[in-house]
Picture (cartoon, rainbow, N blue to C red):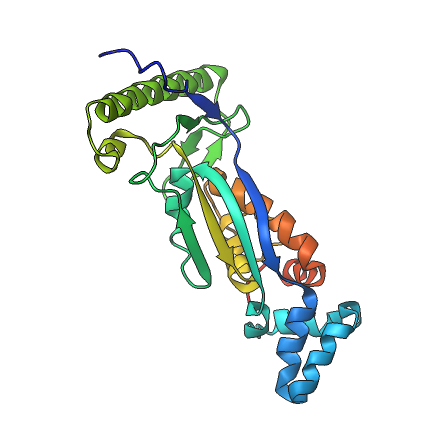
Length: 246
């Protein structure tokens, strides 16, 4: 195999993910005016001038009794950098979500790859539906890191060789693994985000247990922190009612 082209960047290995809130129109008052139009009509817009804290009981009622549509009248757009394997799980969330991901057809993909950190549980025990993950030994972590980094280097070298030979990017990208980092915009509303968090995070207040893959949970945790600052009363009600999306 030939050497990697001189102008190719050396591989970067990451164990983290990043989530940036780039745009939003989301506040607790959005839930209130949307809900109060049922009884107040156009006067429901008065909620925009009031402190939503005075109506936190209404937000909790809507969450508890699962009146979900008032939680849809808001929007959050996140820029997410994560391994491709995370985005393949994201695509299972379709209602209330919009996605645009960087394209390997139109740009040369960069050699940034995911390698689990030392805190990532490595060993699966049990059978599907009843398995648990436990910590790996230092030897197992060493095997994982060395094997993944070696595989990533070889696959990216092959990718570069194909590009250098004039092969189209959309063909050459086929040799790259799902551990490659990609980036995307993901837009959702509070209701769709709550459904996502209920499935993709573990939390002590959740009434229904969830068993997410750790890598997508890492993304979910960062999205949750952003949302909690934007809509604190809605977030409080979500937790108080078992983290079940209305």
